[in-house]
Length: 232
Ligand SMILES: Nc1ncnc2c1ncn2[C@@H]1O[C@H](COP(=O)(O)OP(=O)(O)OP(=O)(O)O)[C@@H](O)[C@H]1O
Ligand SMILES: [Mg+2]
Image 1 (cartoon, rainbow, N blue to C red):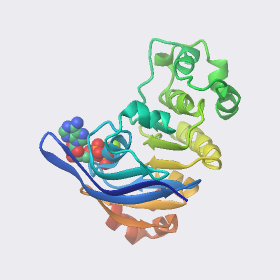
Image 2: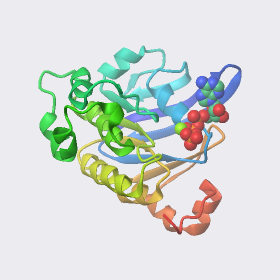
Image 3: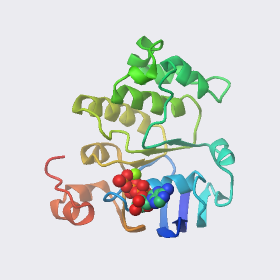
């Protein structure tokens, strides 16, 4: 069964036609990576799925139409979103940040603390004093506390030191075994490790869908993403 399906999705922001007919699917229990150069519309696609931007076309979760649905209903239908800028509460402790995200009767603290033991030891620390990687762990943990049918994660390793990239990658790899995920990520090593499908966008449209093995092709990576794949 197809989990999430976008069909001819358009988004216009302040007169700019940002998404120009985006069509792709995220199958159940798969990890799909959404790739593309800066500014091609990856984050806008995730926000459109969450109902944060008005869209036309169709976005369905298990055949239920999301276009025109309010964001809080979309959240309740099981879509979890970790935004690019993390949006954690800097002045609150780690535990307070997590408590505020509790939605289910039995939040999965066991899962969160087994993935990120550091958050347990730092539970009384103000989130604003954590490193970027630790803050990312809090942001990811906030969605993992609840049962979700699909995770949308926007550039979780952006701006992180290499050691923390590895930590976040390890956690995502563990989570990916039991989740359906749409992951926006520039780190191709991480994408190769966790993604089962890749989608490449350019200028508001999908220009490629296929397997992650394509990322081993230097020429493909250069043409599609404008970067050298060799160093990743
Ligand atoms: N709120 C907004 N107002 C005006 N323009 C916007 C807004 N949000 C996005 N855009 C524009 O839409 C285009 C797509 O932006 P988007 O953030 O989706 O790109 P992206 O693929 O996520 O890029 P990056 O890799 O840099 O995160 C860009 O040209 C951006 O400037
Ligand atoms: Mg973005």
